[in-house]
Length: 64
Picture 1: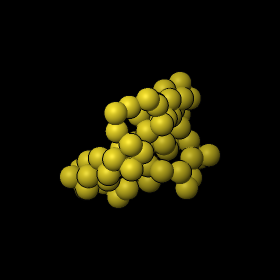
Picture 2: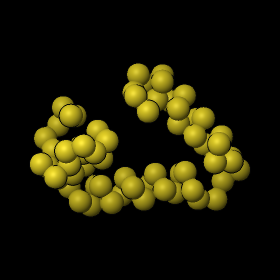
Picture 3: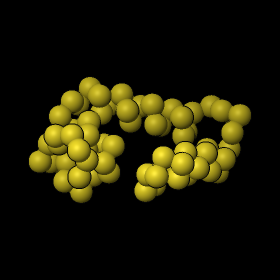
């Protein structure tokens, strides 16, 4: 559970998604950003993008 209020429907969701659960527009924007970063055109391969995400999560002490 995140420290912010969440929708009861968000139970079991990742913390970052659950934190957006009361604001559908914010959730939609977050998912759009994620999909663009991870799957959009880039000079980085999918594996390199995942490596960056894991590294950032580790530095932020976030369980990825």
